[in-house]
Image (cartoon, rainbow, N blue to C red; front, side, top):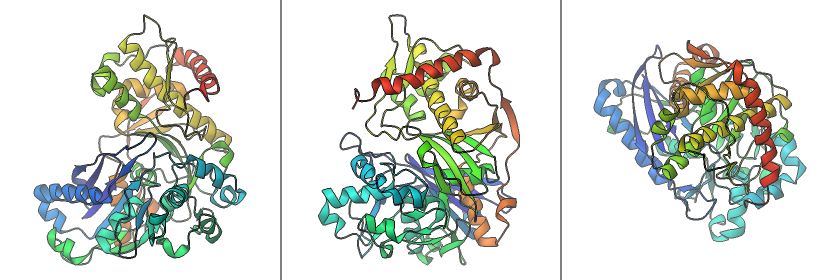
Length: 484
C-alpha cells in the first residue's frame, strides 16, 4: 500500500492506493487561513500536523489493515510558503503562504537584479519564498536572526514524518533560489537575500527516497517495517503526476482555489517576460510551464458569500447551456494577479453593471472572468513557445459544466474530463511514494486516466467570447492604479 498526503490551503488530504494504483480510501483534515492584514495570508504549521493526523486517523478508522501495509509515502503541498525554524526546529512565526502579497516591494527589488531571472527562469513574484525572507529581514529582524531552516509547507510535514530537512526540485523551483536548469540551489541568489545554502534543505528528485517514517508514528498508525517517504512534489506537479501530465505537450487546467494552466516540457524553456512559471517537474530531467491566476474557485466562493448562496447553488442557477457574455465583465484580481500581470496591488472589479444585472448575470460574469484569466495564461504559454491542442480539467470548479464550457470556449480548445476517479495531487503523491519505495519506472507509473468525455468549444459563441475577452484585456490597464 502507498499513502499520498496533500497539504492544501484549506485542508490536508490523505489517500491510500494499492500496488495496482486502485484507490483504497481517502480522508481529510480541515485548515483555516489567517488574514491579519490586507494582502496577508498565514497558517500555523502546527495546524498542518493536526490536519494530517486527522486525515490519517480517518484512514485508520476505515482501512486499518490497508494502512498497516503502507511501504511508501509521497508528499504534495501548497507551494512557496516560508516556514521558518530555529536551530531546535521550533517554528519562529506563522508560515507566510503562497497567496500572501505583502512582500511585493521586496519582490520588485529582487526582480530588478538580472541574475534572478537568468538563473531561475522566472520573475520574482511576491508570492515566492525569497522575497518573503527579505520582508522578514526588513520588518522582523529579530525573527530573521534566528532562522536556521527555511522549509516549504510539505517539507515541514516531512520533518514531522521523518526528522529530515529535505526537499525536491518542483517545489524548490518556486522559491526564487533554485538554479532551475541545473536543478540545484544557487549560492549567489541566496546571498542576494542574505541567506546561506546551509539554511536550505538538501535536494532530491521527487521520485527519490527522502527519509523514512519515524518509528513512533509508524507504531501509532499500526504500520510495521520501514516506510520510505518520497521527495514528492509541489501541488501542481503532483497533480500532473496524478493526471499523467508528464510528457511533452500534455496539459491540464486546474480550477482550485487558484487557477493553473499547466504544460509538461521535455526540456527547460524559460521565458520570464511572459510571466509564465518555468519550473522543474517532479520526474527527473523534466520541466514544466504554467500560468497561474490567484483566484479561481476562490472568486466564486467570495461572490457566494456576497450573494448569500452556495457556490453550487449559484452554478445550478446558470444551468448547463452556455450563454453569450453579457455586458458585465468581472476581473478576478481579488488578491492581485500573477500571470500575465505580476501585479500584487491590482484588485478585482465588476464593470458594466446596470439595473438589469441580476445575480445570475453576476455569477456568469465571475465564471467568465476566471475563464478569461486562464485565456491570459494560454496566451502567455504561447508567447513562451508552448502550443496546446487540448487540456484536461481537474479541481473542484470542474464539477460545474457551465464553467467547463465557458473555459473551452474562451480557450477555443477541447477540454477533456477524466474517467471517474480522483487523480489530483494526493493521488500523484501516492504514485511518487510507490515509485520511491519500489523503483518503478516514473513515466510508466504516471500514466493518464481514460477520457470520459470531451467538452468542445461552443462554436456559435467563440466570436462573442473573443470579443468579450478583448474587452476584458482592455480593462486591466484601465483600472491599474485606481484599485490599490
